[in-house]
Image (cartoon, rainbow, N blue to C red):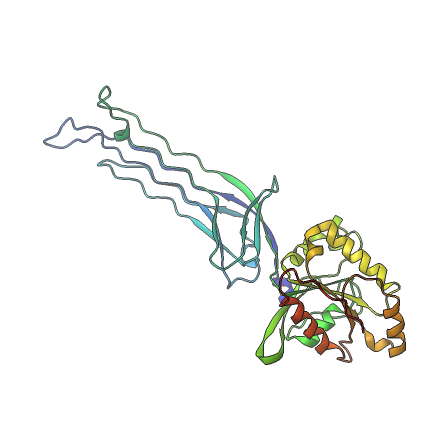
Length: 341
């Protein structure tokens, strides 16, 4: 299944290459039996490099590469010949990948677009040959520098999906059904919690040949920001969404309370998420009549625009896409108006 191939987290041991040793060679030729020092420098050790590649969608290709080692620099030679540099290792990752030190949690690099390139671990510098140490008081230095040692680091790579709209909601809120109806995506759908175990992307067709990308994030539960349920593993995908679509079913015990819990979990994970534009979509509208819709609307206390829709009956979907498109293209800083049904 495609779901099993979506890998958004890998932990890898990496080691750069050590620098080559400088040469302590002396020139020895027929007509120069006592030539001076001509030892060359050692080559640089290979780097560990991370690079954005838009042709990569997941970290699956790195899942089984648990040990990555760059090449060592070669030693210098006579006649001022420098040693060859060690071979670099380039890790191609999808845009949206974060590289962190596994021990300290320090962010080493963030790859946001195709072609972004950062050295995660530098290779050791090559040692200087003895020709660098010749002086008026030391005409024949018999020593050279050793190369710098290799560096080791265990790194964590995390992928954050890039999508225009992120679907946020409790398990079984109807997010997967919505995505399947308005896009070509085929997420797993069933009437039980945590049907979606991996994020799903769908391309949504809009007017005049335009389109946008929607991501179905696995369901949030209270305490998700502390690691409960599917936890923060999937909350990070929301960080790169331009608009958050909070999906709450019309048959929920308390729509206002579910909204509050969702906002609390987003804030606990990253307070900046509350600054993103958000729309509340009340799903499963086919289960209630117009009178009940009006009663629900009268009792809503949420601080965001909202609308009702039914993915099964395919009602309210055009209005939903229109509203999302307006929010995605609203000038920065322009406030959202409350939209009542």
